Length: 145
Image 1 (cartoon, rainbow, N blue to C red):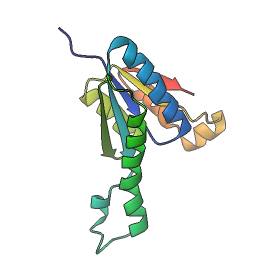
Image 2 (image 1 turned 90 degrees about the vertical axis):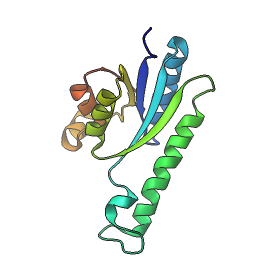
Image 3 (image 1 turned 30 degrees about the horizontal axis):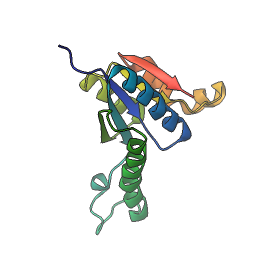
Image 4 (image 1 turned 120 degrees about the horizontal axis):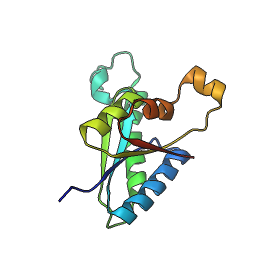
């Protein structure tokens, strides 16, 4: 017998990532899939020295990075009803790269993520995490708006 299908949902606290959680819940509920909620942070407190002796990053920024990641994941997890298997994860690095790596390493068959709805020009100039994930992921990617 095969294990449950695994759905990866990167979250960032935005309205679009909330919609991605809602879509993943609907899918997981109908097929009995497992959901992994993933928050990717560019840094973590431990990577910038100890709080008593901070290096280049202000302490106020270091403190909010970890707390907001945990708060965002907690809020996303609250929107997953009982009966759906869900886990939360925090990783550090470049979001698009870490999302793709996490999906590959954990055997995800689907990534459900929010699209920010950037204009073509803004997306070209700033880059789009969802666009990069769609191009690089080896599994299916569903972009929710």
